[in-house]
Image 1 (tube, helix red, strand yellow):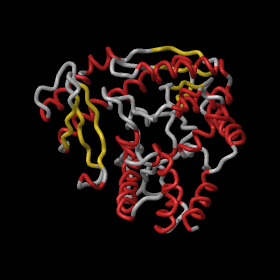
Image 2 (cartoon, rainbow, N blue to C red):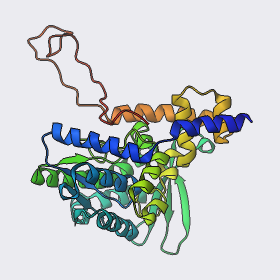
Image 3 (cartoon, rainbow, N blue to C red):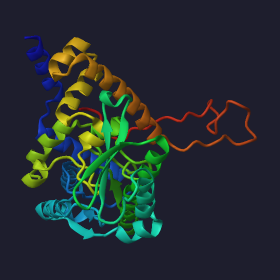
Image 4 (cartoon, one colour):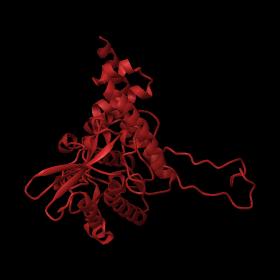
Amino acid sequence: MAELAATAHLERLLAIDPDAEADRIAAWIRAQVRGLRRRGVVIGVSGGVDSAVTAALAARAVGVDRVFALLMPERESDPASTERGLEVVRRFGLAHAIVDITAPLEALGAYAARDAAIAEVVPGYGPGWRSKVVTRGPESGGFGQLALVTEDPNGHRREVRLDSRTQRAIVAATNCKQRVRKLVEYQHAERLHHAVAGTPNLLEYELGFFVRGGDGLADLKPIAHLYKSQVYRLAEALGVPASVRRARPSTDTYTLPQGQDEFHFVLDHRRLDLLLAGLRAGFSDAALLAATGLDPDRLAFLKDDIARKRALARELDRPALVPPPSSQAPGVGPSGRGPDRCDRTRDAPAGG
């Protein structure tokens, strides 16, 4: 009975009226675009449900003729992602362009730097191999311990734990993909005098699943207050293609298929929605255990993991630090009202 009651309570916290919410977000987008004095919205469409919902909301907000969608594959992208992205722009009648970002990534040395880092821990790694980075839970012996999974040309897989230096080298090289895509988005936004819409949902936004200067950069983030399950509710109501709604949430970043739940979140989105909603609402551990079906050790790990990722999100989203003018007295900021603060600003509509 306790499990049913806790689950029912959390389900109510996650419940939304999708039509009313879509109208509310569309009105918010219109107001933000108007406030920014822009003509429309540019959005990167990945073939995933978050960007599809954001594109549909933008079209509802400012009209299909003022939304420009960008599909930005590279040589390691899953072709199915591009096909789903094309389904989205066709479904909503959006003007779009396909910009292959392989050449700039090669010019930046992103692929070569990543492969060189991998070869240091997996001798022989090279052409014909595939790889991905995964996060291990409590059984790994650490919080969010990253491991590298490689597959040789014969299909043999190997997993090795990454030290911090190799981890940073691989992730830094791979993050170039998100940063190059954002460069392309802002190029077209400036050309069209549009605003750039980001696509993170609440799990990604609050738990730091974005790249600073990459997919974390945007002028507005219309669904950053919505849990993933709420995004799916909106997707169905908005008419997002079924192929997009059925696709497994993926990073589509590494050469081996990689789900978001194995790279960053360490838990499927449904239970993570329930857990995060319960933590925000002040649920007891007993209620959280009943609602999510987790065991006590796993819950303790996830609570610590969430706290760490919230801190990561704040760090990734912080504005640049700026010193006060040298002529001012210590402790007085440029406004003259007291010390300057480096606050994290939230630009998503309240709610969720």
